[in-house]
Image (cartoon, rainbow, N blue to C red; front, top):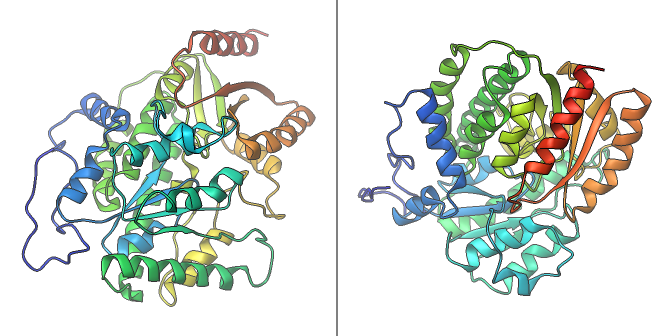
Length: 404
């Protein structure tokens, strides 16, 4: 990745507004573009994040699952999703118990080993590990480490007002780091950028649902994940170019089952595992990196954009084991996902050492049994390297459904 000099007059808290984090991809055909994205997703040196910092920009790293990245974007920061990495957490292991999930350790390792450098770190009380992550982080790094307290009671009449206050508190931390005031007009403009991004991702998922032979789960995954390490403006440009090529792609439907993946909302399965799954089934919906698609429709930001974001988090949102909303029983939401995607079966992907995921799996299994929906259960870890056994199990499962 090449260097671009900071232009005179740019804020010290922002990279140049003309900075492009990706090498030029506009001349690439579809296969080459997908390969370009795949290489970037698998690169544990995170060159785009480092390029941003090298050109004077500041980086806000936030742990899974959801963070209102529009706030960081409005201050000229690069929001970077801490989603772990397929690497050995040699240094981070000594800071955490062996019974914790991999993503906590590998996210910490990325900063310990200097692969990425942050200016702000934000975690969330979504589980015991994440709840304590900011405290451990703050004892080992000089940059601010915050906990964004997303509401535990989504059904209270005061939830939206409370969450808007949390977002304003977080904006003050960001302003202190960047020196850039976040006014409502800037935040509203950022919301519009992210609205466009969410619409493009919905279009990608619509294609995967309606014509899954045109885009496999691993291809859709890399197109989405790239957005977690570049600006949303640049991600919008990339998706807007890739989607027409996917829609015009030649392909013939094959005799495969339609599958929903459930369990990739926080720790993410290895890309090679997704490739193996796509050989044997059409994945027509999933919860992979659900934070990027958490808000399911446009955010209206004409009046108070902080409150609009808070309202969207509660009222215009998807579901996951880490949010508790009595109006959205997660097992019923999973069944709705299955029906909407016209899926034949569900793959319950259980990340190792994930308590929220294990808790919900019991309810998922009962609901799927009651509705007589076929399902397959398997455990994964982001650093796993052997997939033959899982692929054989999936192949057998799919054949049993196809030829029963």
